[in-house]
Image (cartoon, rainbow over all chains, first blue to last red; front, side, top):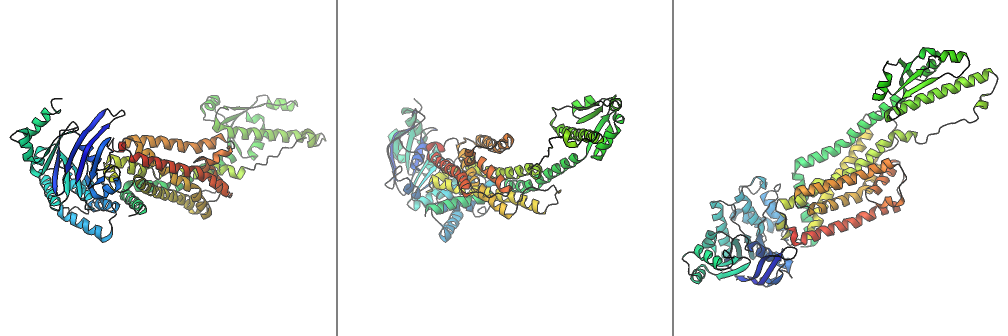
Length: 247
Length: 392
């Protein structure tokens, strides 16, 4: 369960660039919550706040009741993050890349091997697991990055634009993976600016523009609320009527 | 999971990744291994050639027929007299000739008349390379002058000591050392250089490289604290650095022990004892350089920027011993505490077979230890700042 309450964050020497402004929303367990917004809406900043890398200027963010600022390292143990930066170590094999993160999370021995084998199987990495990652395709790299992010079986999974640069087959595989995680009762939050992703996958949608939460709810809630026929229309209407396009 | 095991995990991963980078590692080790033999071979041959040249001088001369006794004296002293070319002055200026002996045309006549006869030593004294030959020729002429004069005195029944109240005998303590001074410098210098260079590529790779490959952010999101990550990386880079230093020194050791080098009377020993002492002296640098390199590497916004900064650092560090060699002055006492400088003078002591006082060694360790703590602490702070993520 992710809870964000009145969180604000600005960057720059004099805090002149406001990235997130008084944002509040929740992402429940056993559901996929989509963070939808145009470029620069503050999606990545919000995810980084949740990932404990960025400290909010105001407000409070908790994951499973733990404060992301005060209990930073306890929070890290319970979350898996597929961030915007998803570089792998090119001279290590896929398996070694995953194992490194598992070891840093305190796993080891047969438990870790078993966990890696399971991830390799479900993500379809078997044929490339023992190859160095330097020649991997975007889709292959993405799968390894996901495996790395969830190797410690976190209860909460944060994904920043996970489908960027993926072909349709990889996107479908990713969706399957996320649905599998939802079925296990995990809390999933992912950001995107691609409408289809939201429609295909999300139980709940949080629309973000200029650092503010415009609306939060299920797809039907949002359609009803905006009075639009499709989600895309709703998005444009909401952003336009908000501060997005009009500003 | 303890902090120690996370540090070990980071260190092990960095070492593994470095070993996988075969080409960089190979270049590094081959350079280190080859350094000793190649340098020693070149220097030994240079010194041996210089020694040969010192023994036999080729002296172009003009009008030498005027002074047959002088010519005989010079030949007895291993001087090969040749006819000077007509344009010898131009050749001297151009540096093709070192020195030319010009016997005055009226030499024989002046000698017969019992007056001082003139010989000219023509040379361009601004040329460093000619200097040795010039002074050798001059001292031979002085010796001849003395010999001739004392013969004349003896003929007149006067003791030589009358004309020569002062007898100068040069006792050169540095003589055996002299030919080896350059070698001594090079061995110490190369050992120092090894401790800078060994970890450079790796340090950049695990800092600026990690950032550029976009794997820094995921790493910072693990439960590993920034300081643990920093310590792990430092250990890994220090290991590589130590390996390069050991290999470099082994190259020197083996070359001096077994290679067929020209015999020039090496004025120092590089046995296992010196090998071990070198390692003890170099240890603070082997650990300090990675710490500084890591800090500089993680400050760079890009790999290129980090590389430029590191190169500057390397330049400064590698110039220090050279400056020390050329100033030729006795260093002030506080130099012993300055990293690089202190190590350099300790290494020279070791090569001369002198013992190192524990207090000197402790002094040379003090500043590096402080700097290591400062650099690693600063890097950990850097990584825990939000701006660590920027500039990816």
